Length: 388
Image (cartoon, rainbow, N blue to C red; front, top):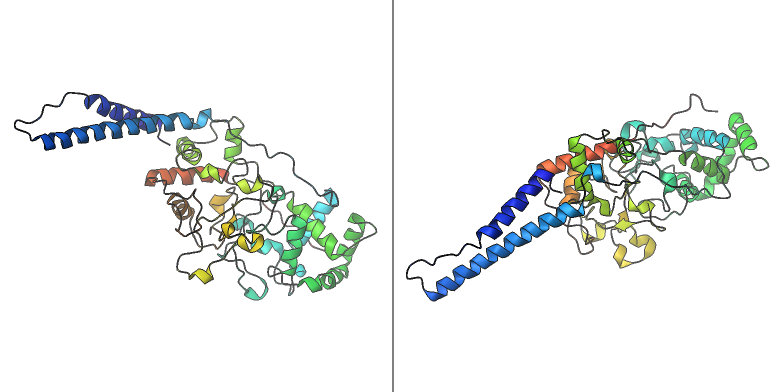
C-alpha cells in the first residue's frame, strides 16, 4: 500500500497528466494526416493511462486504511476440547513431562521437544524433521503455538485431532515406535513408578495405556497459546506497540502484498478458520525436481487433482524465530521466504491464482519483514525440572 505522502504524489502527478493533456495540441506545420492521427491516438492513450493510474491510486487509498485506523482481530475464540479428554491441571502437567521425555521414542533418542525447541521458535531447526537414528523425514517440523485451535493437523491435514496426530507421530517416523508396538511401549513406561502413580491418579480405573499417553500429551499441547505479541497489543488498542516501519509493513500485509488472503489475523493462517483446513499450491518444492519427485501434499489425502502440491497454510506467529521455512524447509531466511511469496512463487500448472507478483520494492520487503517480527511469541516451552 502507498504511504499517505506517496499516495498523494501519485494522485497529483496522475491528475496533473490528465489536466495537462487537455491542453490543445498544435500540429507541426505540414504534418501529414496519418501522422496527425497517430499523434492524437498517442495523446488519448496517455490520458487513459494517467486516468487509470489516478483511479488505481484512489482505489488503493480507499481500500486499505492506515494501520492506526485498522480494526484488527486479536480474539481467538473458544478452543474446542474433546468431550472424552477434558482439560485438568494434573493431566496437563503429566503431558508436559511426556512431551520432554525421550523414553517415549523407539530408542530413547528423541522427544516431542526435539523437533520443537525454544531456540528454534518451537519449529524445527533442520529443513526436514529428524527421527530416531538421524533419519530424515519427508517434511519440515512446523511451529506448534496455538495448535489446539487447528481443525486439521499435519501439513496435509490428515489428522482431525491432536490425539490422532499424537498417535501417528508416536507410531511413525517422528518417534519410530510403530503402531503395532504402542501398547508395548506403554507397558515399558508403566514400569516407571512415578509415571504409573501419576497415570493412576489422572486416569482412575484406566491408568497408563497408549491412549492415555496421547491424551495427556494432547492436553499439554492445548496450553501452548501465543497471544502476547506486539501485534496483539497493537490490535487491542496500544497504538505505540508498533513503530512506523512495522505499521508500514502491516499496511502492506493487509493491502498491496495481500498476505492477509491466506494469513488472516488473529491466527495468521486461514487454516485455523476453515473446518477442513486451508491448503494452497504456492510453488514450493518444485525447483530442481522432476514432476514425479514433487511432494503431492494434500492430494494424497483428498485424491483431488485440485490439491496437487497444496499444503496447509502455516501460522506466521513466531515466524521471525522459526527458520527455515515452508513444508520442505527450503528457504533459509525470512526475507527470502517473503520475496518468494511476494514474487508469485515457482510457476507450475496447479499454482494458486492468488500467487501473483506483487511487485514489492526492497523497502517494502523490509517493512513486511519488520511487521512479521511483531508476531514473536513471548512465552517459552518449559522443561520440567525432573522426570519420573
